[in-house]
Image 1 (tube, one colour):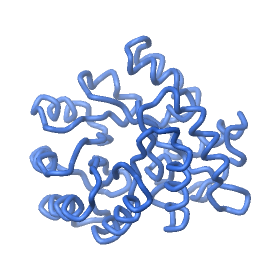
Image 2 (spheres, one colour):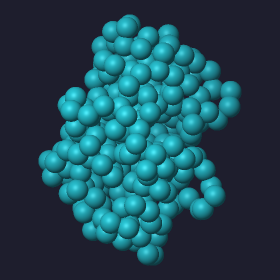
Image 3 (cartoon, helix red, strand yellow):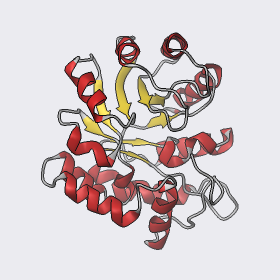
Image 4 (spheres, one colour):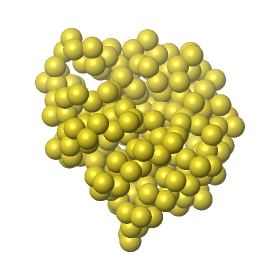
Length: 259
């Protein structure tokens, strides 16, 4: 179980190091890696300072867990720049989607990953999603990307369990991780999970990964915490603040703004 962390903010809008430390401490026993700066962490909305801060604070308080830095930037050049910064900070890898915006071809998506893997000296996880980027790798392109040296996993948040099953059947040379709580039961055989719910219920998520509870238990928790909402990260923060894990429920995005 891997946790995509929320980005805790202090009252002045900066990233709260003490809150990051407290959040990591609550999940560390139950997860195998930490991912700051991805969608649950509002990575698409983080400016350079906040992004660097949440990655740095996570590394400082990681309790020995691997840290994979989420990178959600629009262009290949921006992704490469942040990936280089993540490596310099000490991240053990980066999680990278396709370029953002309309008109990006499959060839351009493939070349994007060629450029990232060629210039970044840390392992790369493909973030397979279209909610933020508006683009999705087709099955053939995704398999080609998986063959690139430096790619170690796919975080599959494409939302199509049949496509995930086909990817698994193709036996790519990398790990495949499911990124949606409501699809875990439809994608048997994945190598792991990257679930926002792990911010709130890390033990439950770990018990699911070890086969001790079923998908219905995750579904019930997701309904309780409203994780199917378009602004799920906001609800995660509200609960964490209510419990005293983080100091404020403030988000980088404004109320009413969506991914």
